[in-house]
Image 1 (cartoon, rainbow, N blue to C red):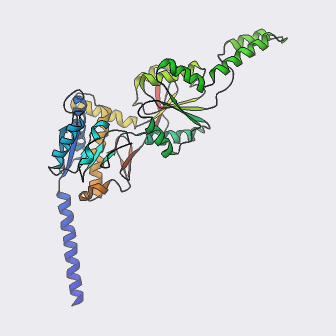
Image 2: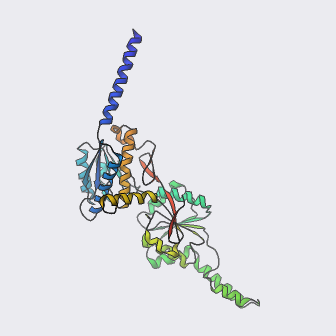
Image 3: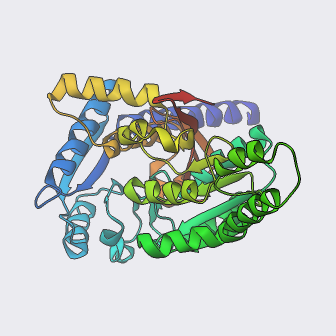
Length: 384
């Protein structure tokens, strides 16, 4: 009799388990999409909506519903939009985009926001930064330095608001840095600071002293030696073999130009920077090459851009690819986890391969495993 009771109980448990699973599988995954749909960034918001639609079509499931809501660039509007969606039963959000839009979101409980920002400091507890953050980039740079067998690396950071993000990432990545410098982006001050970092005045004086010494010598070939020295700018080496410049656009070019002015060339030192999103203007600057940096997978980005353009007859923003992948990440996690426990979904260790590359999820943090590239002779080459 006891055996029969156990068999019946087991069958009931199996039935209830299968019934519960079927129910959870049929439930809709409701995702809030917080993006600027009005104001100066509305085209960016529209691009992100289009990319999530494209992702939804590529996933090919009827179990996901997207609820877009306008945030503008106002944190109050962001809070209002998120609250409205939460009241409709939505617990997970893609967005908002801008860091300043996050400040009031900790007022909303039992939800998760996958913000597209790459900043990781001072985030509300319910916000996860999903952008290509400093730690992801420095992890890739660290791998490259080890591959290149660089021995002495200096780190140059502008005195801007993301300086603390960089310092935190340096510590977390455990990248080996010989010395860190902070510099002023104002051109005149920058040049003076780079001269000091590279010991330029001493090296320049070394050259003048050597020319004077040869001129006053009895060497038979002194004229020939002097001609060779006059082609130089300095004598003496700098105390590093590689330099990481955490800057972008024209400021990045200014720093490299200042280094070249002080007779430190990318031809004989490794010049490394942060993710430049394949900025084509860098291809045209032959003097600053070779230049190395981490980034997302270039082939995947090009394929995504082509498909997006063919589908919508418009060019996507690079954040569009990120939002595309985040939809895939949410769907992937929904197949592995119980979404009723939304606050713990992103605490578990998971890896997801998207168009950007591999997402590593752990302890409410998202990091990216990035590729590494080299711009040389006007072309970009993949290192790894």
